[in-house]
Image (tube, rainbow, N blue to C red; front, top):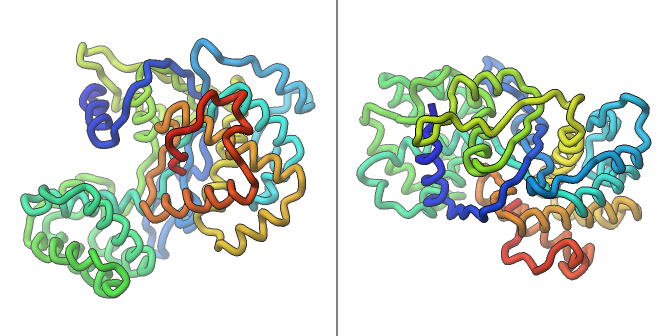
Length: 395
C-alpha cells in the first residue's frame, strides 16, 4: 500500500512540484521494456539495457479538450483494421535519422503539435541502481547534513565509475547477491565499491569523499535500500513509474497499454488516500481498442530514439546527421522539438528523467545546439504557445 498524500508531499518538497489546477488525460505506451533486468553468469540478460533506456509515455490532453483522431487516421491512409504500431510504421528502422525522415510522420507530428502534448518518463536502469547504493550509504548521521547537490554528485560519479568498470561491478553483484546484500556480505560489497573507486579516483574528485563514507560505513549492519529485494535483479519491473505518474497527476486520468505484470502489481500494491479510499485514476487497455495508445506508441518510440541520439552520438556525428537530413526529416525534427517545448511549457513534470546529471546536461546542451542549427525560435509556434517558455525542457 502506498500513501498518496505522503508521496505527493515528498515530490513537492524534493522536486518543487506545483499543481497547476488542470486535469488531464494521459495515454501511455513504452519502448525498451525489459520487464526484469537480471544479472546472469555471463553479465546481464540483455546488454542493450546499457544504452537503451526504458521510456514510458505518449500523448495527453486537458480533459475538456481531448481531440478526435478520425481525421488523423484517415489522412494516414492505413489499411482497414490496421493498427498503428511503431514496428510496422517505421519498418524496423533503427537509427534516429531513418525514423525522423519518415514521410507520414509529418502528419502525426503536425497533429500532435496542434492538438496534444507529449509526456514521458525515461529511466536508465543502471543509474537507478546507483541511486539505491548511494542513498543507502548516505543513510547515516554523517551524511544527513550533506547538501542534495553533493549527494547527486556522488551518484553521478559512482555511476561513471561503475560503467567504466562494469564487469567488476557485476562480479561484486554476483558475490553479494545484489541488490539483496545481507549483513554478512556488506563488507564484501563495500570493499568491491572501493576497488571500483580506486580505479577511477583521478577522474572523479568527489569520489574520494564517497570512498571515505564507504570505509566508515563498512562495519555498519545495514544497507537499507539493498536488502529484502530479489537477488541479482537490478530492475524488477517498471510499475512504480506508472504509480508515480498517477500520484503526481492524481486528479488526471491515466490510460496504459495492456501490461499484465505491471497491472497486477499496481492492483496488489494499491495507492490509498488519507480518507482510506483507493486512488483508482488509471486503467489498462489493449492498444487495438484505443487509437491514442497507438499514437503514443509512435511518438514515444521516436522520443526514445531522439534521447539516445542526444546522449550517445558524438558531436561530429550529430552535426553530420543534421546536415544530411532531407527536407521532410528537417521539418519533422523541428516539429518534434516544438512539441517538446510546448509540452514543457505546459508543465515541466510532463518530461521526467532518471539519468545522471551529466547525461541530462549533455542532452540539454545538444538539444539547444540542434535548435540553433535548425534556426528554431519560439515565435515560430506562437499560434500554439501564447508566451515564451520560462524553462528549457529537461531532456
